[in-house]
Picture 1 (tube, rainbow, N blue to C red):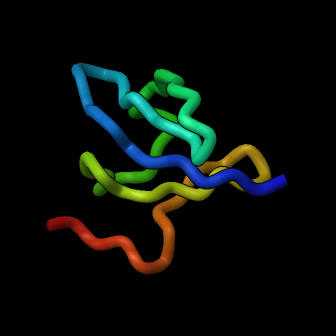
Picture 2: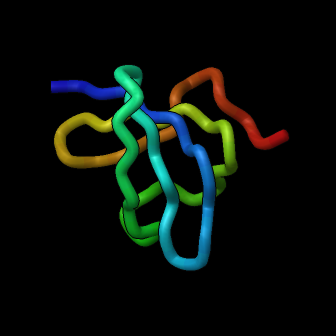
Length: 58
């Protein structure tokens, strides 16, 4: 399965992610790729998060 999430907020050691359906989840930054930023789109696939191909820091 593949899911897309948007980084809503980064606070301390956690990031708040939101699904396309609007569900929000806190995820430890240690589980996320380096270089994430608020507004970034992440893809969760095979139990690994990665930045969507069209994402770059602002």
